[in-house]
Image 1 (cartoon, rainbow, N blue to C red):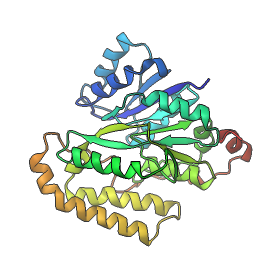
Image 2 (cartoon, rainbow, N blue to C red; image 1 turned 135 degrees about the horizontal axis):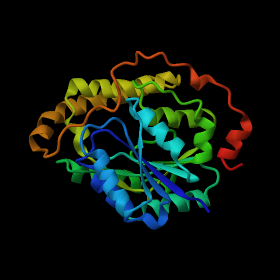
Image 3 (spheres, rainbow, N blue to C red; image 1 turned 180 degrees about the vertical axis):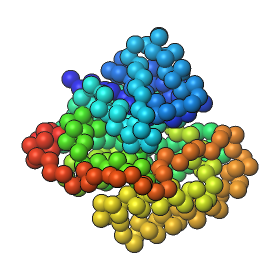
Image 4 (cartoon, rainbow, N blue to C red; image 1 turned 90 degrees about the vertical axis):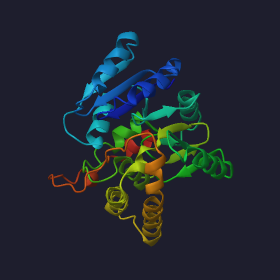
Amino acid sequence: MNTLSIVVPAFNESAHLGECLDALLEQQEHIHEIIVVDNNSTDDTAAIVLDRRRRFPMVTLVAEFERGVVHARNAGFDHASGSIIGRIDADTHVGAGWAKSVLDFFDRRLDYAAVTGPIYLYDSPWAAPYRAFVKYTTKRKTDELRVSAASGNNFAIRRSAWEAARDRVSVRTDLHEDIDLSLCLYRVGLRIAQIKSMCVEVSGRRLLTPPLEYRHYVLSSYRTWAFHNLAGKSLRRLLVADMVLHTVHWPLTRMLSTCDSRILPVSHSDTSVTPDRHLSAIREDRFAAASGK
């Protein structure tokens, strides 16, 4: 039987982490362990985790001192002992049946290495229309759909696939680590699915990011696809449209919102000397095992 480990990278997330963990703990019968990776927080993030751990030994606190979501994710994934590794953000609220749907999917579909699902918003003035839009677009799709990339706030991967891709993922902090991991899987033929039953809600605080800062966030998306030689004109048009839409609705969003803005999960540039680990060779039998072949 598969076992599910959940990894939650966190940096100064005391405002959201408690509710995130409580939603997971409601599904503890389907979860092997919950690993929160504290990435140099200066608030009560660690205290919240330790409070839950006193009552629920399945909760673990891991410290990662190298700043960056990618480093926190890697530390959590490497620490996980489950055959399936779930990955959410500290402001994610998993929906009812989330953990069971992840396990059921991997038990049933040996031909997929990773899975994601619909993402809704909470604490945002646009939560209701956004939910309606996601439900409308999801309804028009099949229950299981192959996708090329998945968001880190609602993601699960076979541990064998992570071990196979571990030496290929970049540790650059100016890239989106979730897109990079997805494209590493995509480039070697490991498949990612989107299923309707794997629903989460995330905070709408990203919509409060000032337009100039948001531009860096979007540029990091393009930079990540370009890093894998997969960026094209259609992606540029999509990202430009995203920046324009964000700039237009941002003043009203700021006036109507009750939550705080979120620190960007990516840096503006990466000045560290990073080896080309994504180019290292990996034996084919490891990928065959990861895909269940």
